[in-house]
Image (cartoon, rainbow, N blue to C red; front, top):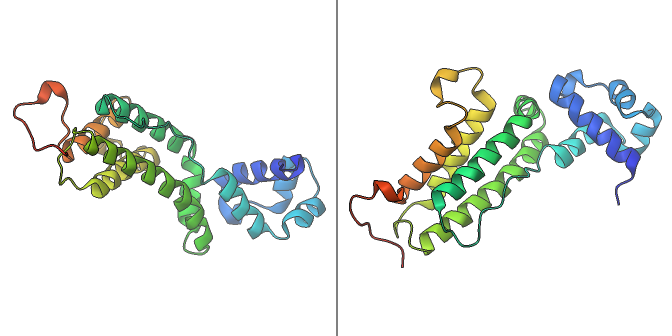
Length: 203
């Protein structure tokens, strides 16, 4: 079990890192925010870099997004709900993600921490689209990997960059559903009302 003092330090480091980045986050500030002294901080982690990286591993790489069903029934509703939750989580992590992207060139481990969460989320999405295809909702030869990547990229870009270029995005309230619909359309899974002709389904 994680020692409470260690977890306090990691949480404080993650919060400060999200606001100030690696250079602006001092060990003194972390210690004060965690309610410990700097001696304790260095005794547990050894260095500021080790502490920040560990904070990112614990709090910057885990994306608690919704589960996609094992058996698809309504892919459009299911994927829209998942996309909405995923965007919400990414928005909550936006400051930390931006800082990690800035620090990635100097500290590749920062990029690795972020990538771990993204990889796990991508894998879950890709597996779900495979189930959508296997249950006959999508074209047999559809490129599921590219479709998964496009949806992930759209949600990530929306969550991280919308405030800089808002004119490039659909309304925030409908954007996740729009991205999900376009992802499904790219693999031949169209909304029931939009069916105009049959498509070659997966067997």
